[in-house]
Length: 97
Ligand code: SF4
Ligand code: SF4
Image (tube, rainbow, N blue to C red):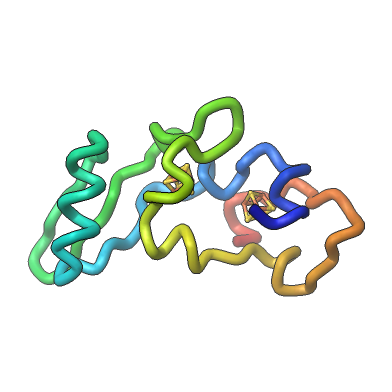
């Protein structure tokens, strides 16, 4: 986990309504479904529903960190892009993401 994320309360995991899943990545869909994720297919799109906060966020940490979706692994918030590791992240509002 990035140093900056360790000082944050998992705000990104509480902010979004869904995490995009590649519908062709059958392994990911299967793995997440097995873990109890709420996966929805809509035409060519596939999402993991995380409205109201991701169900896998426990004590402000991802409880499926090693098995989290690819989109979560790739996610970097603005503070991380700036590599501003010395400052605590300000709690971004939904519109700032
Ligand atoms: S990516 Fe940003 S909002 Fe998400 S846990 Fe890390 S610092 Fe917090
Ligand atoms: S799977 Fe983990 S990293 Fe992804 S939104 Fe949920 S708690 Fe956050």
